[in-house]
View 1 (tube, rainbow, N blue to C red):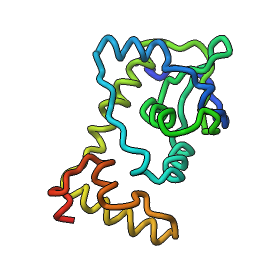
View 2 (view 1 turned 45 degrees about the horizontal axis):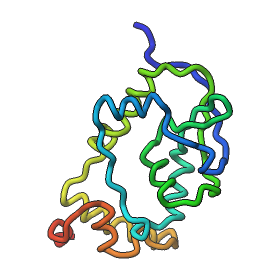
View 3 (view 1 turned 180 degrees about the vertical axis):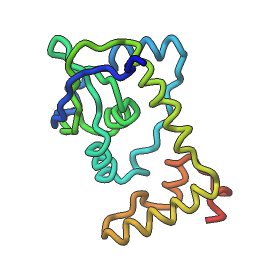
View 4 (view 1 turned 120 degrees about the horizontal axis):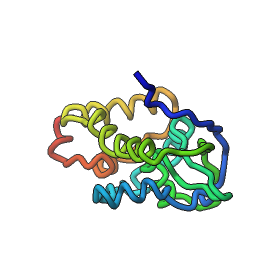
Length: 168
């Protein structure tokens, strides 16, 4: 059986966010072909930015360099949120991929990232309530500020109605 994993080289670098100029053309074409709607974004006021930036250390933005230009090829949603919330000069972790890219490989990964990540980590009503309680306890235990500044901010960011959270 042939391997479906493509070989490429990558290196994590700290780069200004503005250096990633656009979504890679392959992913732009996938958006058009499948008529992918833009995903809703939580309000920046509802998110504790230091936690969001820490998430980039674990899940850096993937970018491909061509002709001295960087284009986003992975972790697209977080890249879009960073572009909306951060200054272009903000330095962020970027996994810079080099080598020839096969368009079908990156388009497939983009579709998997867009839909299956949400399906795999989908939350029930009870999950939303218990996750909120857990996030506050976790932050207190680590002596960190809360991930969400209030229960209302959590509800907005998670798109959870007040009725669903009343149980928690």
